[in-house]
Length: 488
Ligand code: ADP
Ligand code: MG
Image (cartoon, rainbow, N blue to C red; front, side, top):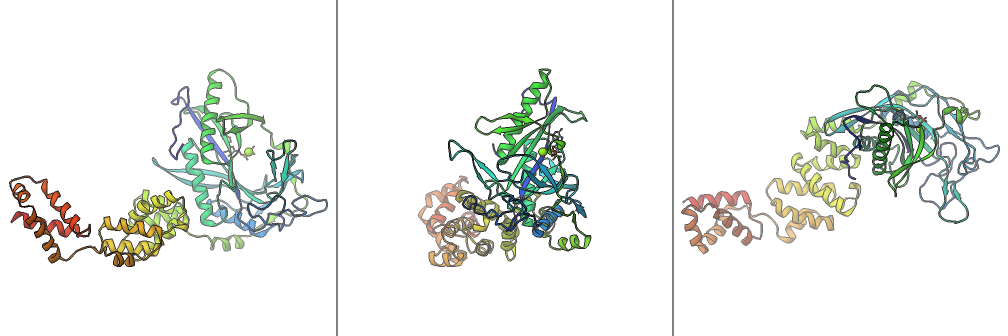
């Protein structure tokens, strides 16, 4: 399934609609954990980044990492949300082998960030999705079931890493909107540098809440929560499966149990895990080891000054200032590195032409090589030069493609390539005239045919001239001269 998914509810999609709310877990970009100084670096040997706090040795005390708090506030500002002056860390009690404390330190009644808003750019227009809250919490360790056939192994490297749980309102209505929402969240957090959004490494994953209801109904249906889905594609597949399952149940006169389900990616189905636990099952209470978090407005305002221009604002500026279409602006701002690259290229080059080359040739090249724009084989400086050579007529668009291919292998100055390979466009009218005279002379029969009405032969002459010039004849000039000569 690509970005564009088709959503079908088996029985009748004109009767039902699906309602979705996401709890996104975003790993905070930080060097050390939320309450300890252990490293958060991904990919280390198991259990090499575990302090006594992370392993929950008796008597150990958590100490809050101010940087993580700042990251959460930044993210809150990026979500246009209210930052709460007071928030509280609670213990969420449950037992699991990869949770040595026997509880997770999280925030419940008093989260650090309150209500906010994310704007989605859907093909049919913009759509606002409400944010319920964002809270800080610890990640758990990782249970590994597939190394030893007789036991489960536990890696505590992740234990205690800071997560932001971003809870949306039940405002999403389709797998496409979910795709767009996750990408927008990721884009905002990457702009802010608060979460790298790397889904393969588990830095961004979500619990997906799904319910269905009759269209036009104001009441929400009973939801099921699909736990810990770590790719957009799987989220979309899980939603489609789950919506169909619920509609089938309703149509069969059965009721939906509120439960927690797992998505089996191999079978493409969701399976019941447990009936949904209620908050009181966790026996939440304020962690006595941690004071409430008090943040004054001065602190928040100082952080506000560090917030860069975010995708929505950048998009608006690109449209207003550079005359880009909303579509072009959306793709150029979706990733901060792309927007930087674009702005570097257009510093001294034509905007329209640069946009076409970036979204066309360059994106195709990066796609083919599986590279991010920050690793682009062609630097913004050299692409800008190439665009200028096209614009001022030094080279044709066709020759530019040849040069682009050479640059893709080795990031070389296009000027050097043009000179070395003698690719400069022939724009000297006298030289072109000579060349055309030669061709007309060699093909007098065709000239007669052309003059007697066979207009199509014009293309033949152009082709010949291009061939003889090695593709270097300036096409505009060539056309002009040819026309004058042939009408004589
Ligand atoms: P819990 O911890 O019990 O899952 P949260 O408040 O953390 O509760 O998250 C609830 C999530 O479920 C939110 O994202 C909310 O938008 C979503 N949600 C609530 N009711 C429904 C519903 N009827 N259908 C779909 N999603 C829902
Ligand atoms: Mg939940």
